[in-house]
Image 1 (tube, rainbow, N blue to C red):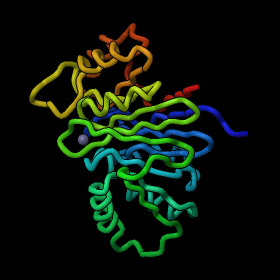
Image 2 (image 1 turned 30 degrees about the horizontal axis):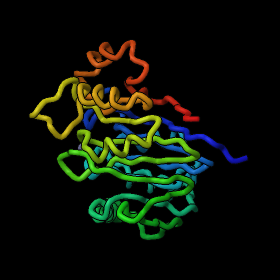
Image 3 (image 1 turned 90 degrees about the vertical axis):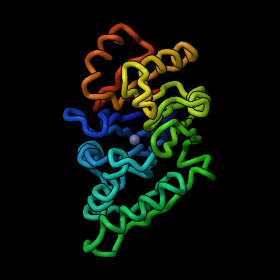
Image 4 (image 1 turned 30 degrees about the vertical axis):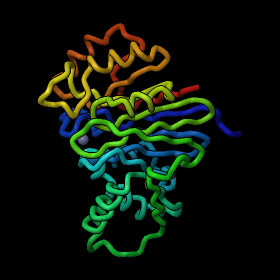
Length: 250
Ligand SMILES: [Zn+2]
């Protein structure tokens, strides 16, 4: 029987060099189709632990080119190859990011053979409005490199994932289609030194403008986490995402 809800498995919630948390990454499932969002250096083991079937993940979406978002691609692909994946792998990203990922794959696969039991099918965000059962849209955030937030909608429900970067008019508009928004929130307060990251003050403003949506925060600066948790202790609309949690949007 076809399912009628969105399921989000939270793999990692950490910032780039977090000593306690794996790099931020989630798997979104609808109607049996699974899309992994971002796959940083410390994510592959979590994918294998939670989804040991090499055909479990149908597609990967990458928000931007930083290592904590893409350096797990080569390891997961090698693991899937060794474990006998047969399904094609769909990779969705910007054209600029595709050429970066292709270079990463050339370097990463050197000396490991050229026989691939599964096909890689690339999709550009410039001309993609559906992937599997999802409708998808993208919005550019304000980050140090090009980063695109993604909105996935299925059966009238929406989930948005910001990737890195501060909120822009484009991402705020994207989030209006979401019941749940995962927003990178590196800082408690806006800091011009870190202008390419989001902060809790910005999120709280956004949340008051969008009372119908919930905001789960991730990629929090390691030394800001406990302060932020205290500030959000009794908030039901805005909270910190927890690794390993499963969220169902019905
Ligand atoms: Zn980044």
